[in-house]
Amino acid sequence: MRSLPRSVASFLLAVGVLCLVLGVPKRSRADTVPQLTAGSESAQVLSWETGAGKSYLVPAAEIPAFIILLNGFDRVVLHDKMTEDGKRTYATNPSTFWRQLTQQDWSFDQDTFKVNQFGHPYEGATMYGLARSSGLNFWQSLVYSNAGSFLWEMAGENSRPSTNDLITTGNAGTLLGEALFRMADLVLEEGGKKPPVGYEIAAAAISPPTAVNRALFGKRFDTVFPNHSPATLWMCRGGFSLDVHSKNLSAPVKEPSKEGIGIAEFSMEYGLPGKPDYSYHRPLDYFNFEISTRARKHNLVDTLTVRGLLKGTSYQVGRDYRGIWGLYGSYDYISPYLFRVSSTALSLGTTGQYWLAPGVAAQGSLLGGVGFGATGLESEVAEERGYHYGATPQVLLAMKLLFGDRTMVDLTGRWYYVSSWGPDHDGSESVFRGHGGLTVRVYGRHAIGLRYSESIRDTNYANIASKHRSEGTISLVYTFVSDRYFGAVEWRDPAGR
Image (cartoon, rainbow, N blue to C red; front, side):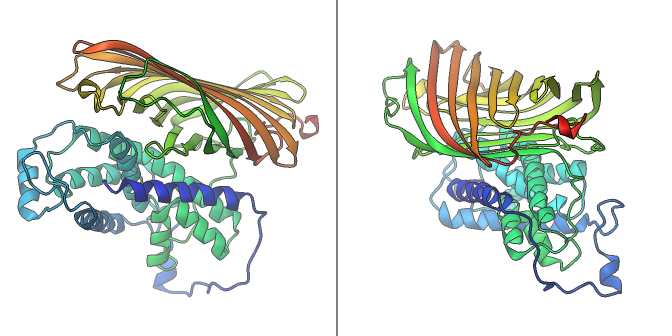
């Protein structure tokens, strides 16, 4: 996927719409949608519980159509983009498709980090969404997303097919696509049996493939996915951020701005442990989604992360602790000022909540695993331009302290060890990203907060001088929070709050 600016704009618009709509109280509308009539049409209506009415054929036709449309768009907008051997990148035809299919000359490409690590996962999320909204389950839709990724590499471009794109498009795209699908269906559920037009538009902005199938096939795919009333916490933040320190910049890289820059953030936790009668039988019945942006011309998306429970179960320890554990999937895109890091991974881990005292709770996650990652920086220094790929062991520790309905303290640390698979870089990198925050509720759902982020990168390559880079930022933010108790789940005695 090469049309990144449009992808970023539509994605950020979706997040903004989600903040607005989830903040509106549930309401009803006039009965303007006609009821289904008896007959063959009603027999085809999708049932998420039994699988009746789902379709394997619909996404099998829609995904190639999407690829053709994307290729056509890129032909027009990126008409002058050329491959290494002087061919127009998107001037594909049956002959080029056959050549790619028979030669299988795979490589690691060096398209921009934003295109490869954000644009391609969003493309994969679109293809995943086409299958998911046709009634297929998570694993079936994963197959369609990966098949679509392979088809794009064969038929969408004239450049050598890219191993890194194949991995990120199909797999990171699946995790992102499921999170967007679930959030869109939360909006539709909030709108009731017949969601008002505003709710339909909001869901379409969050997950366009869902809206496409709801529009194209009448009532067949209108049935809203059953979320089973998960415990959720979502927060919208806006404010200003200031770079407070940076260390060991390369000479051509400009110093960070010492003036405050605008920021916007959205986060959602879905399926928080401890809610009675909620189970974790389906992939991503628990997930955490975060996106943050900075008002920088070349670095708009600062962070996009998704982690979710793929296969696991709930457990409890005594009266005061409830948790889940199992296999998690994660997609991370982290792009502070000095460097970039991204990873698609599988991890073993746990998420839980412990009541420390009446009205005081601790929530947290601990994950450790390995994935496929990329890291680097955008620099004019020849040996540092681009980025490196490799197997990526990683650890995540996230913790929140919730003090009744007034205060939340949150701490998160991520560490990545990125080895190198590319032919030009013999070595490895170590990357750390951490943040801490204090949020104080002022009135109703309105809060203010102070946040600090630290980014550290250490490189150790045979042909690049070893370097230690770090950057720290502090932010003052307004926060709109969905729950006055910051997502604390009460399973003992609701009056105990």
